[in-house]
Image (tube, rainbow, N blue to C red; front, side, top):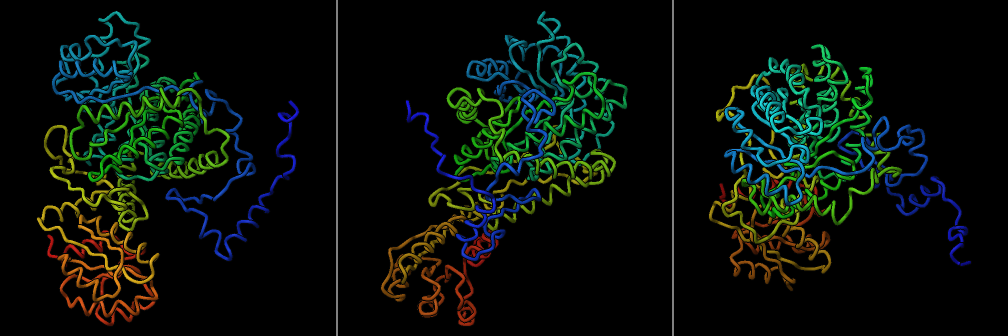
Length: 618
């Protein structure tokens, strides 16, 4: 008993921040603290290597409980969420059968995508036959101009079933502004339909009619602060329009649903959702709603398509799993996990099953639904939340200064900003500043795409391309350029062989051979590693016997001055010669005619494109 009462830390005095900094500075041995350990985020703020209680002092949100304003810690008292799966409806009987099947496999939220021409009472009755509307969240998406018609059909249908209309929950994905972002076409006239849509759905108070599809920005490569800042402005635009049209602020706010994406930036995404609820509550509060419930954000989340890959596609499961963890820990209301194969084919039964089970594992085995806001009190995440909120609010105010979100879209501000982020992220991927495992780092050396090709998601719902009046968002996935390069190699019918000429210092030659194999495999080249050679002549002879197209010299910087030129001369132009590294003697080697160097500072994508061109691969 006595031992259980010992104060185990009584012999240790509390360390101050200054003491921590002194210890870190000493361990850095003169290296710059900010350059070595402080991370500059894409969101525009710095992240320190450690946080302490003093970093969160003064944050008012720490005093609130889950379910209390400003709802940073959640809009409910538990951490339950709806497991959602979307169904593209082509045959209504088949879609109904699929829906009823997956409802028995853990799904409790359905999303139906219906062509506008198919919206009628008979089809909706067939689609929802045997589905209890009081037990399942029901979400619908159709062409914008048919959304009002769909709402009327749904109201009539639910009334005819005799169910408790107050218990029906879900949404209609009415969002003309989203269509403007995707297609560059002016749908301003449809914005006015929102008021009638909300009024039509009054018998179904649990159905939210107006959507904010920030998911679109996420899938276009937006940074986290952009997705959040624009989402807030988007929501405020809808709220303004509904109130101006004569709706009560409470009813207007309760009609809006946010659909967010989730990137793989784990802690940052947790912070994003927490900040989103807090900032939206503050925006709605300014309208003086009659009920606090109006300030509670309704947030659906979907894992990102931007970082999905064709090659090593099962790694997509790891990405979507961490994304799902972020969203559920952050307290979203519903979640859809994108099937791992969506980038190159229509998801099949197997990939959809895996996507469902990814959520079920979090619920049934990891018990993520049992603890509300487990991130609360974390000095790091609380600081991230405040920092992201600050950056997103700054962007929100910039949009408001432009005249609101709709005006910013018409002025191309939103599209140009997000498209620049898309471009910047592609450069980051090309330079390996942003890593996509299996694509630009540690690719599967032997994998072939076979029949896999990127899925084109840019077609109009009407089946023809629309003439753009504004700039459109660019949905090129982060991996798209590497995939294009690798497919170019594969389709050429010629798979270049890269031979590692390893010589000299054991540790350095092994490290550089590993680096070079990973580097060149990103283009689909065959790589041949070796244990080491006694001389460069022996290495060149082995490379020629192996019929190498590329010979990569792998050694230490100091030894390149000795080995590089003799190896280059021995090769005598029979294959491309590459030096792995950026040695101090690089200028001398270039003067001798050596022009190819690969190292951590080069643009991997541009280098490999250049090599393909030199090898005659088009």
